[in-house]
Length: 361
Image (cartoon, rainbow, N blue to C red; front, side):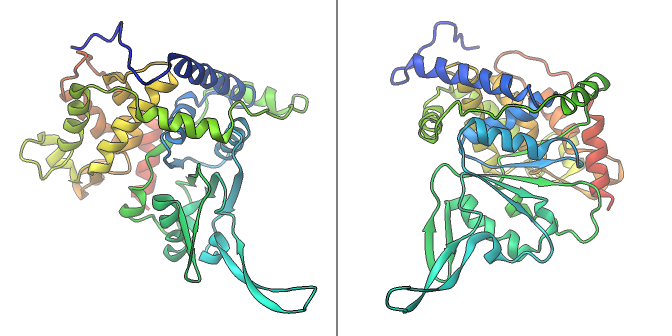
């Protein structure tokens, strides 16, 4: 077990680490003025953003998914854009299209590209599963390469660029489930839970209070790009890397070393991209917590949102009402941790009901 008590890493300024840690706390404090609860979901969204990645947000309507995204955009000074996905939405409605423009001086006409809403820093793809696959695919190039191709021309998106897509787990009629290849491009699958009674009472008090003052940015876009690069330099030991790899490899039923419960319940396990997301996310979480090193606890803190959309249940598991989160709990509980931590599986009733409702439709 590695002792990080007096650890320091050359090339990383401690002042920068302390600053981003303080800003992270300020962002959480500001969001609590308008958002009640959802601390874990907010943490995962910020980890994905500072990792330079995208997130899928799953929850019933009215749980403040859109509000959180707008508030984060204001606090981080990100150019915000929102697309409401509908069955009649066309790819050009997202990427933009060529329009005929007339020069007022010589009256000549020429085509000019009118940029679509995808040209933003923070894109809210609302109810992404309600639009046909052709339109969903318009996001793939942007999410993977930060570019947009239209009418044979390629446009580079201004960094940073993040997609936060939402899905409504109810009313599945007329929807188009995202294929595994597109789901894999999201770093996290974040579940939004119902608030507790006390939290819901606080929500009512905030909603009937006086008008809230606008947020002022705590970071500039330049600062965000700087901290995204800083997150990559956070130290992660070889034993933590091996810990993340072991969780991923043992989630694959084709692996001869996998656990019996994996082989009995899964058709496919986590991809190598899942291991990348675990390691990069752990480093980013360490940075946001004001540390220059990642630990096994950082891996465990993000393993559920990384895995739940990447491991594929088989028919037996679906029939037995097994959920992806239950499989992840068993995995983490069964694999020895470098810090000697013993994981006690949590009750995730909402997550279970959420996935069951999606699987049974």
